[in-house]
Amino acid sequence: MRDAQPSQTALMAAAARAAHLVVDGEPFLFRDTLAGPLLGALADELIGYHRRFGEHIVLAGTRAQVTSRGGYTERRAAELAEAGVRRHVVLGAGLDTYAWRARPGVHVIEVDHPDTQRWKRDLMGAAGLDQPPCLTFVPLDLETGDLPAALHATLPATEPAGGADGGADGGERAFVSWLGVTMYLTEEAIEATLAALGRLPAGSEVVIEYALPPELRDERGAAFAEFAMGAAADRGEPWLSFFSPGDLAALLKRHGLEAAEHVRQADCVDPALWRRADALRPADACRLVRATVAP
Image (cartoon, rainbow, N blue to C red):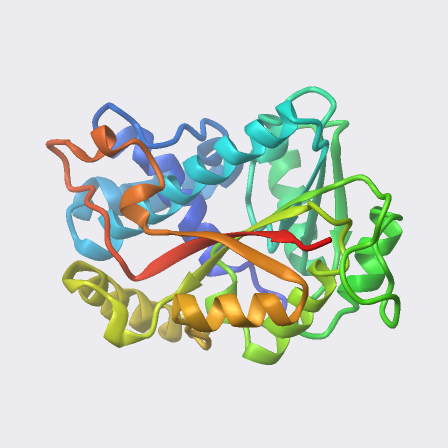
């Protein structure tokens, strides 16, 4: 949120997920059938941009980004749910709709700015979408709020601020997704969040999206980033933080998290899904890192 106004980034991400099912052909990278209804009266206008200009790299690139990362993350969430991990924390959830798709028995905890959550609840009401019983909202500004305390209140096995170093032993593991957020935060806020995540029970897993510095982007990633960063700055939500895979792995390690893999956009989904006739192509401007809380 900015000045208590709806997050344009959250709107653009939801619009891209909705537009993917309208503008792009099959096979779909990811199916979010609730993004459009959640946008309500804004859906026609926002999806309309994709209908008219959908081949432009910033729109096609955003659709590729949000659908590929969503596909990877929800596939991993399903795998962990099968293995008994029943708590899924969505940091900076925006207009995420995973809670409506979560497997039975999974508890979804959405952490986001209080104004963003009030706005989302209003959109849910207008769309006739009831809050799923599995969903808990935790209002928190990640730049200034106390994430360790918020997680400890919701996931009691975590260590509160000032607790023991490393993962809390004996607690129930959690899965945390943190997508489309870190590039908008200061490095100090990112580090504070990682410190909180490192106090989750050992074996908990996180998937984090991060932006690459200019020298590591491929040609399409550089072109996408140029437009995306300019548009984000114009709407008052500039990209602030960039990491190489090595630097981020080192930062994770300092906070008790071990990087398991760094995932390019091209590798987030089955490679066959990129063999397509529409405008979707993978770009290497942002990547995912999957990490676990060390014992």
